[in-house]
Length: 580
Image 1 (cartoon, one colour):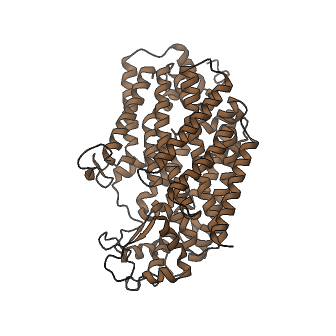
Image 2: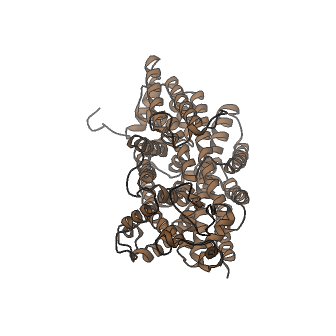
Image 3: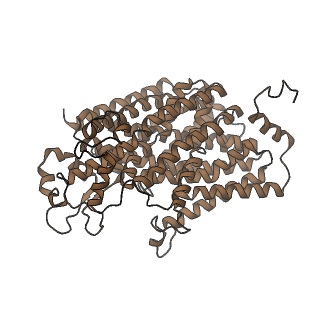
């Protein structure tokens, strides 16, 4: 059976499974549509959270960006995993105890203000739409190779699949679909990693293989990779090259952005009790760790395999030739990815050899970082069924998170905007119809924007995390842990954080209509050494400071709101033994 047919069968089977689950778990009420009826088992919710959490950025893009960025990009691992712990410990149980369907609903009730709820809706939509662009980018990359269609066609196919099961099933259908998607993506990620670790080091555990000796050199894997990169003029893989300030702010931005992501927070509304919310948070961390402990090994080993593909004997003088690429069966993967436009050659000196070096003027290979994980099994000449499985896993990761984000967007529009503000008397049937229409529109917008993303999938997602960090996270933290922050402070803080971060991103990326945008690239930060992906931490600080001063300059929140905050944080019956 040829590879294309195998890909089609495996990917088609997983899609049929997802749609079948959505039909079986179709939402019949708003409670099921928004929160799966709050009846999901903690372990299943942990798996669904893991799938929701491990997006295209985690599965498809993270290993690629680490493979090319080395130590500096380890901030993705530290920020995302640390942020999840922050979310599980500081926010999830309290928000579940509050008992609302959406994040804007909590903010609106806590800050006793329809305006605060509306600002939260705006912040949620901006962050979620930015995030979903990264998922659609990943979908396009995966489809373009494994179904041999254009990246644009891949986006349209992915959007149609998400529409089928997300619009039909709501949160109930999405939850059970995400359980299946987690199983697919974790198997798809770990099996090729085990194969490649065995090939390069003889160690079947990739996380341990990363610190084992390479069979080819007898030296540790990371030392071997550093030597290869040095020979080609690239910077060391294991040394820090980014500034400490930017790396710190980037890690913080990812952490607090993680804790402010509405589509992850809403997962904790789907379990029966607060104790179940804590339990599912713990299970989700276990399921997430399975992939995140493997990703650094996938990144380093993929870079080694990539280099040895073009320099089979390890020296520049014996580089791969263009004729080798056209004639060798073992290099089918190069030709296949070349067709997608995500890998390209330019024989600048006309010698017929492929020069892959750090010097931009001499380098003749261009490779999109988002293809590394997907191409890894092909580079290592693994069996066809493994390649097909990775295709299905990458699509599962992208589609699961896209569905969760679209659910958050549609809930904000139908529940918080339409029912909460425009038409409070809307019937449950019409509210569900509005939610499904909103989700359909959101899918269309995300697909359109995904055609021209602002960066690699992981970079685009990092921008979304920064926006969530600057706008939503501070409002949630102050709403839970401070009785003094009032409605005026919350609104002013969210707007200040959101606007300042958006302005910095737009200026830094050169998206304004200005004559010279080159100086605003990521390579040349505008403020100190802070890049656009790191500014979310500064935006969050601005949010906190503005909210604090505005709240203290205006009246205190009503007594019943202060008692509400106390009730969220303090367990029922606390102090009964002492009479306090």
